[in-house]
Image (cartoon, rainbow, N blue to C red; front, top):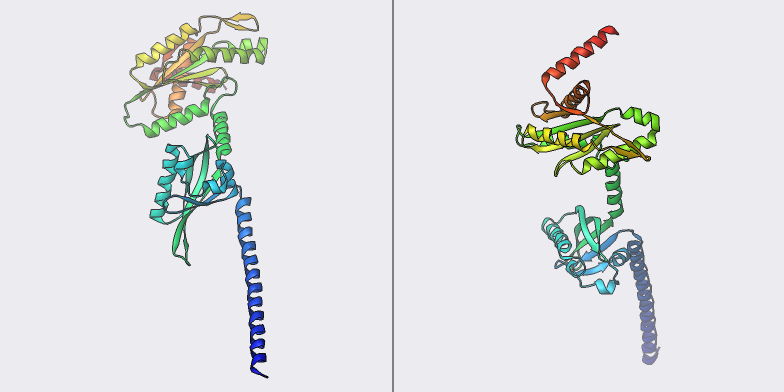
Length: 341
């Protein structure tokens, strides 16, 4: 084989190798594009915000959900920080979390507020640091799940659990929860709290004679009237049936509870109109004061109940402040009833 033929053969062999290499490169690029596209599709399919930031907070990637939440295209988000698309106070909270993640270099999750398209959202968010071995670079990887609707549902459920459906007032569970919290957070054991329990006299007669619908209208009317005069900072609640409670936190003196009780009596003097008929309904009121008449929830309510029944025994349409003697009388009456049985 002459020299010219050998060179030609080498050139052809080299061309083949180049062609094979180009083909292999195309296949590798195709696979790389496929995997890159697949990863992007996976991230875009997630119903959560996924984003990648540089140490200075500049965005270098955001998935489809994050772009849609912000109402921006990916190219418009690139290079931006939270201060470019969140209100200042929300951006500061988010950046503070970012810096904490960079400092601790660990996954941190929490609930944060975020602003998207001018609306405030509640987000469950998490951030961590990822390290790229090939380049030695580090980035902040974050995710955010919109829990705004969940928060709203929780708020509605909580309101339903702690408020009376008929009157919209706090209910007995609210009162008990409030008193438990009051007792747990109380700094001064001698601080006074007033509990006024009122029962509507002869309500059952109206309810039975006119029907439950009329009874409900009357209860709503009573609640509306009491709301106007219970005083700032005090809590009006429907305790159940035809019973209402007025809580008086941070009471200055027993006379304050007496004054509000008298105010309620005066307030109830005007007749109520139910189905075009006027009814005058009076309350019997019992008062107990923390810590003198009980240091726990149940005792305060029970003693106010005893005082309320004392008002009924004395002719109704009046208030009574609990005394230990009332409890003795109530126990004596109970013993008589038990003995008779």
